[in-house]
Length: 369
Image: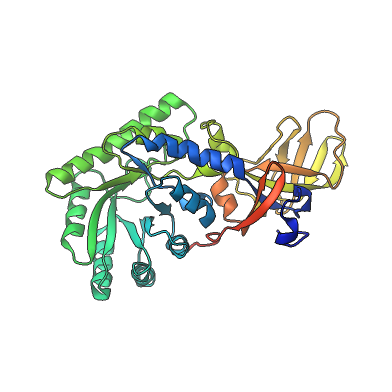
């Protein structure tokens, strides 16, 4: 990821000045994606709280806030600390913060920002309360409800009501509402099935909200969703926030079901070998691209396809038909999963119409704690 010239020397130069592999960001596509999503929520009661984990870059997070986002979602406490350092206060950590070490950091974060956290068990709630009360801070809390993904979350219905009641009673905590993520639905390829299953999952979340409200506890926020289901969540009464993230930079897996968003993220690579007429080897492998949802694709899919993606530092491309591609030529590839790809790099090379503008640090990369 070292570049052939300094950042100041690269500005306004072509992508030929960038060493490979490098993570590219098309500024026009990024801005269009942010505007497309913000326009959808602009006339709705439901609001957008973009997920930082998808790009891990505070420059992008600030653009999302400027476009009308109500706050930022983070996956990890370390990400939230980065976002707070960038001056963003309204932060949801869509995860359970467990144990004295992390809760101590969360309490410290409360002096720089106004974080919310998810909870799904009484033991965690009581520990959060004890630390917050001792430090004289208030931690905002969402009770996480398992609405079908089978990961974290308390059961919908009475179990969630009881946990919400505990949060509301304990000192140092403020019950804000519920979180529920229909992760088992967001990437369903069939639009009709995605709609059907998402509605069923959200009904569990909304009905739980109503039960809590009937118990006399105010529910201010119900948060969840992702890029694949943002339109369904955004049009569902009782859902207040959507945590979509991938829409900003995109990857090919989501692009197949959300074609209204452009591909802003790509990886610039160099052809390092042409061992056979129909084969090219490029200088990135598993260490440089997230591929949980399949191997990457060439940005120009008419040129060829990835057939070998098992090496750490190399990738094999099968070329379609005769090709004059030479060693040293460049190729752009699109990851199947943008979230894990951005975690592997330390900066985006931001370009516009083929010209380098600047580099943006990816401050959240590697923030796993």
